[in-house]
Every structure is written in structure tokens, then in C-alpha cells.
Amino acid sequence: MITDHTMIWIVIVALAVGSFLIRFSFLGIVGDRPMPEWLLRHLRYTPVAVLPGLVAPLVLWPAATGGMTDPARLGAALMTLSVGYFSRNVLAAILSGAATLYGLLYLLG
Amino acid sequence: MNSSNPKRHFLRGMRDALPFILVLVPFAALFGVVATEAGLNVVEVMSFSVLVIAGAAQFTAIQLMTENAPTIIVILTALAVNLRMAMYSASLTPYLGQAPMWRRAIAAYFMVDQPYALSQIKFEMERNLTVSERYAYYFGTVAPLAPFWYGSSYVGAVAGAQVPPAFALDFAMPITFLAMIAPALRTLAHVAAATTSIILALLMAWMPYGSGLLVAAIGAMIVGAQVELLTARKARQ
Image (cartoon, rainbow over all chains, first blue to last red; front, side):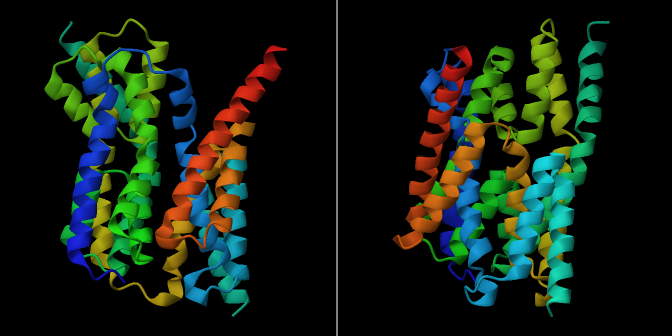
């Protein structure tokens, strides 16, 4: 539970300004000058570099079970990943992950 | 004749973006629910969705705040998630860069994944579009998505407090993120980057204040870039 509302507002304002500046960077400031290839090469991987690392501990050590690996959550994660990988469909992946989670939670009681 | 062309492209953009509403509505509602559960009020949830307008970064910030990470780590990690948009900005500049500053600023505010992807493909395939036709198409792709993003966040925030714990909402965010990552694993380099990110994040979990994730992300970006270089070199031989 987040109780520090000043912190929440600092984060909102900083992310609003920061996200806008990232989006505005080339379109508004740098213009049409070519970007160094090495930089583009690293930026390409930002989502797959940040999000898996953020999710991995939540999958293996969920706070809801006191940090114990939970077969329902692990199964749901693997199902989401495989459906998303093979179907390339975000919505299908979310729905099958949720179905697996609820199915396993129900079955495993 | 000339004045009717931008309108046609605006409508075309709207039509191309319509299917994405299906993904966006549950995602935005989920943000409202998860953020409310985490302790944010409706005004804070809406400020996130309207001012930041970047789902993955918003979820990241909420997650790290519930883990009591320091403010600076929350901000840096969430912005790292958004760094991909610098790439979007760079790749749209040749097509949208000649417009007045205010127009480019509005386009920058709305630069999210789906409009970027649709517009990039459109502009690349139809090289002879005028700048105003391109803006018409771009804003056309934004028009159906942005209102649903704001509206669904609101619905989620209002409904959020009433969701019982049996729904295991703690796991909504991991599922959503995995669903976003999986289709992005297109090449060996993407798979290598994702794998590195997971291994490093788990190994660095002892590091204080969520700083392990930043280390993991930087390491994963380097691995992704290096594997891309190696793969390209091999393909040339």
C-alpha cells in the first residue's frame, strides 16, 4: 500500500515531463539528423530488457503467497508467455493467462 | 479536392486503429484497478493516465512504489521502460519533422506504441503523402485510442476498490507484461536480451531499492545489441 501521496505526485510529474521529453526528443529538438547506429541498436531492446526483469521476481516469489513459489501463478505466467509468443496476440495471451490462473487457483484450492 | 485528402487519411487512421481498442480497454482498466488497490486516489490515477499516457511505465512505477523503492529509482526505471519512444521519435522525424512546433509537440504527447507502429508502416509504404496527410493519418490512429485509454482508467479506478482478493489481482500486472513481451520476442537478439534481463534481475534481487533491475536492464540491452551484431555478421558471411 502506497501512503506517501507527495511521492506519488513527484513521480507523476517527473514521469509526465520525462516521457514527453523522450517522445519530443527527435521530433522537436534533434530534428532530422541521423542517430548513431550503436544508440539505435541499444534502444531497440529497452522493452525486452526492462519488463522481463521486472516480472521475473513477481512470478517466482509472489508477495501474495509470502514469497513462496505458487504453481497457479507460475503456470499462468508460462501459459501467457507461450500463447503470446505463438499467437503474437496480446489479448489472447492475457485471456489465456487469466483463465489458467483462475483455473489452477480453483483446482489447487 | 486537396482539402478533402487529410480527412480521408484521418478516417483511414481511425479505421486501422480500431482493433487496438480491444487490447487497450482492459489494459487501462487494469491500471485503474491496480493503482487504486495500491493506494492511489482517482485524481492520481487519472493524472497518471492523462499526463504520462504510457501503460507499461505507469505499471512499473506503481509496482516499484508498492515495493517502497526510493523515488529516484521509481522514476529512472519507469523512464527506462519509455526509452523505446526515443526510437519512435527518431523514426517518425523524417515524415513529421517539417510541421510547426506546436503540431510536433502534440504529436509527441500522443506518441504511444500502436499509433507509432501503424504510422511508421503507412509512411514507409506510401512515400508521396504530404506532411498534413501524414499528420491526419497519425492523429486518426490516436483519435479512437486516447479517449478509451482515459475512460477505461477511470472506470478501473472507480471499480478498483470493490474487487475482492480472490481475484488474485496481484498477478494481473505480471500477466499483462508477459503478454506484451512475448510477441516482441521476434529475433534471437530479443530472446537473449529478455533472458539476460530475467537472470540478472533474479541474481541482483538482493541489491537495495530495486536498483538491481536497472543493472539487469542495462546488461540486457548490451547483450541484445551484441547478439544483433553477431547475427548480422554471421548472415553476411
